[in-house]
Length: 139
Image (cartoon, rainbow, N blue to C red; front, side, top):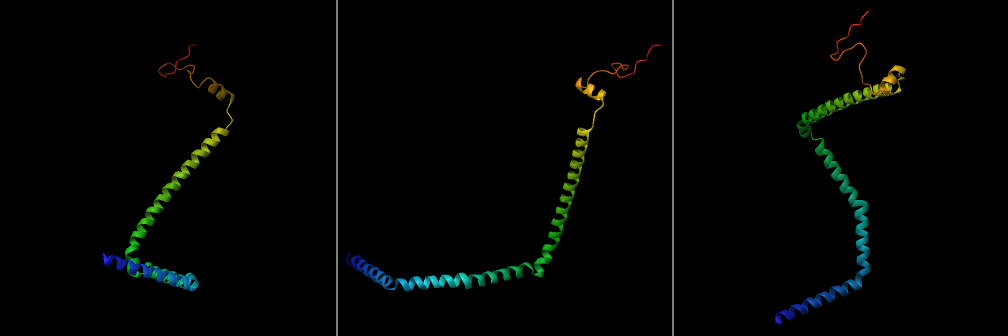
């Protein structure tokens, strides 16, 4: 029990002395922290970034790594080229279909075609039987 009281009194005295220290040196601590942040932000961080960028470039252009990755890169680019070629062919077909549909839409129909469309486009042609064979005309 006495040990716990002794421990609590020591902790209390340490906390009080720390708060007293902070109270006496608060502005000094604030200025030191602000200066450290400004130095880090303006000088240290750009240097670290430059070093990391240099290391990354050095690793990316390592001849051993490039030699291993080159065949994969060529294979992937060939596949991409083939996919682009297929898309281009498909786009060309779609373009031709659109042009054909637009040409058909703009085409002027003859009066006979218009009549045929109004009637629904169904019916028999004269002179043709049910089985599609032409009937002979009597003379």
